[in-house]
Length: 334
Image (cartoon, rainbow, N blue to C red; front, top):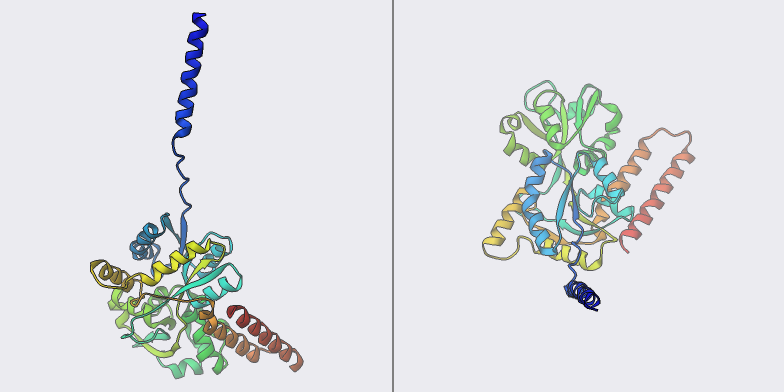
């Protein structure tokens, strides 16, 4: 009897411990990290350091960790987006258009640059001294020039110079030059400054950054052509993220750097380093209509300049371009 009594007491103690454990509140699982995609302008470390303060505040605002997914090329960043490895990203207008058109992302906000500085424009850079520093000579004899340009999805590094300067002069950037280097804006400027190329595509914002970081090299360069203002860069988000999270992200971005006080002042300094001095304005997919127009102009001019087996084949291609553009515009306006 004594043994059975002891056994019952032991069993009761075990059950009591389990009951007490079950009564404790269950800790919620940590929220998954948010992956922010960034294309390094100068280098990976520089880009990470520039974004760290903003992303740290974003993490606190949404209550989940935010990590950086650094890409080295437009292609690798686009591939990361296609594979679902990026949740949020700042993209050039063309890369944002690709992501939205593939129905993977939506526009949340767009960059606002400082109103007191010149508009963000594509430029061509050449050396001040040397045998090849004239725009007229470049257009007359492109096959004698070595080109340093951006990726074909770069608005300022490729699309705008192609649409507004080269194709109207019946010059295809990919085939008419003596040689070409495809690289970042920093690398293309350095290529011309160091004599490895004769002309580089670039833009006013990144050339301003280049002047700060490489003053001696920048002093060797001059701008010989400027484009019309470029479409602004866009902040995009995965469209399958919860709507309440997307709302929090937009509210944070639009409010960042606004208001008075030391915190807002500190945030504005971060925005200056990111070349977005006026911060971010709320936007949706319609903000990509100017980029869609540029893409359409590029496709149409390329078709008009190409060699065709017949006029009917050319017209068929042009009709397909018109149809695709109309569908894209309708989708962006939804």
